[in-house]
Structure formats: structure tokens, C-alpha cells
Image (cartoon, rainbow, N blue to C red; front, side, top):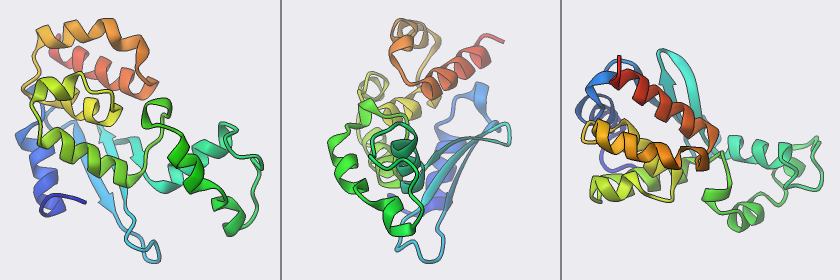
Length: 169
């Protein structure tokens, strides 16, 4: 899942790889709740406000609210999770705006293990997120990405605009 310790990864993301213009504005959190069988909740905060959450719960809620599930008003724990894994498997990450904790970890590993240019143009919105926040991505590359902006999920557009705004202050 996470390469090394979470505290080390957090330091890497928040201090070592973050664009200078965003230093001390972005915070990553990882929480494990009792009874979740090892599943985690990853969160990104911008200026101390929750920006994005990555968990099974957020994806399942998204599936319910978006009509992926036939019963969009489940009332019990079992019913709430019915068909989740099948829907998740059938719905590519590029067609969603919510993502699981494992997808966050996989994207982080992909980002860390490939050239930054590949991450910038990744089809995976989470990998692209890490790249947009990366100090190695300069103004010229950001300007080139503007053309693709409308094709991205709204949350990623917002993050991109944050980075652009921070660079041009």
C-alpha cells in the first residue's frame, strides 16, 4: 500500500515535492478506524479546510447518489454495500469523481515511480493531482495543461486553478 511510513510519505508530499507556491497550504491525512479491516481514509486539506477524501465510503456514496445502484436509498449496512464491488470493477477511475483509499495508494506509487512528465499527462486523475502539486512542474507546463482543463473532474480543475493562482501571485 504506502511505500514506507505514512509520516515519511506525508513529509515527502508536503515538504519535499510540493511546489514552493503551495508550501504550508496543503496537508495530507491518513486515518484508520477500528473495525474497517485495514481500510484507510486519506484526506487532502487546503488552507486547513477539507478538500478531498479518498475512501470506500465516499465512492459508495457517489455510486448511490449518481444512480449507479438500483436502490439509491439503502437503509441497512448490508444493503448499503450491496453491489459495491461489482460497480467499482465496472466503472473506470476515469469515469468517476470519487476514489478509494487503494486507488489513492496505487496512484501515489505510480507517481513516485515514473517520470514527472508521464504523471502530468496521466489518464489517472489522482496521479495527475500529485503532478499538479509537484515542484518540478513549472509555469510553462501548467500553461500547456490549461487546454485539457475542461476535460478533468471539477475537483481537479479546482486544484489546478489553485496551483495556477499561487504561481501567478
